[in-house]
Image 1: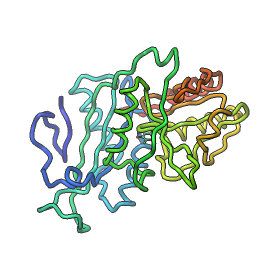
Image 2 (image 1 turned 90 degrees about the horizontal axis):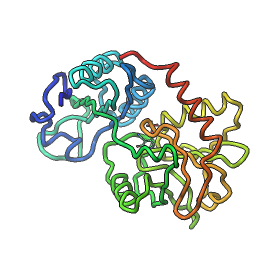
Image 3 (image 1 turned 180 degrees about the horizontal axis):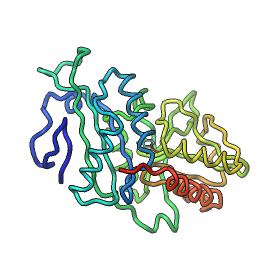
Image 4 (image 1 turned 60 degrees about the vertical axis):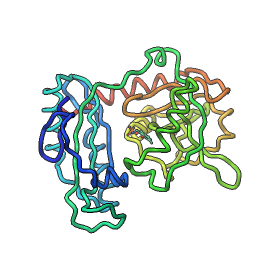
Amino acid sequence: MYIFVNGKIIDSGSPAIKVFDRGMVFGDGLYDVIKFQDGNFVFLEEHIERMKKSANFFGIKFPYTLDEICSIGHKLAMMNDLKEGELYLQLTRGVDVIRDHIFEDDYDPTFVEIVQPVRKMDPSIWTEGGKVLTYPDLRHQFCEHKTTDLLPNVIAKKYVRSKGAYEALMFREENGRKYITEGASSSYIFFDGEKIIAPKIENILPGITRSKVLYVARETGIEVVERRIWLDELPQMKEVMLLSTLSKVLSIVKVDEMEFKKGEVAKKLENAFKDLVISTLVKM
Ligand code: PMP
């Protein structure tokens, strides 16, 4: 597989990342995943903007323009013979001389682009809906950024998959009451019979799919409320939907032992989202 690392396209088996790269020793970096299909990127600009904003927040230099990232991705897709797939971007602060928590302000960042086939999903999930398990959100307070330090996310995902579920529905606690945050690699929204309710952005990722689906919901005349959602409200919800770049709009039919309908609203939003994707594709 051909990958891009700091200005060069190389074979993925070649040595390319230094051991003292701060991404390697501290998880001091950011990433993003963008879907491409039929020679087009999906919401590329929005993903890059999110990454740039976070790079600015953490004081990491952002070395390439949108057009450069686009043309590197295009080249990689051609070289790897992929018409459809995932573009993975990773940006780290750069390389230290020795391992040291303290960083200066003048690092040259490490920038990686990878294209790979879309990770396989069991196709029955689209017809039957997904099952998820609640799991404590054990992450830090920087979850509004797509940081590379994903250990709590991968542990949550591994746990739920070992129990036959598709994704975790993570929660935090305040004064003994649990509230819903997000998935290990996805966002959630709910339909209470009248309106869409989305967990507000308080230490969760502002998902691109989430913002697009909330947009199409409003456009189709569905009221949208963004607020904290307590786990004990879940039994009153009529529909549960999982959202992400790869899962798109996925109906959730089971949360732990609680069952939900594969509902009409999810179907409507899934179709409206699909139309929005098609109408806004970015040529590679
Ligand atoms: N939350 C987390 C923690 C994620 O990792 C992801 C997937 N990148 C999402 C939400 C969904 O974000 P997006 O719609 O931008 O893919």
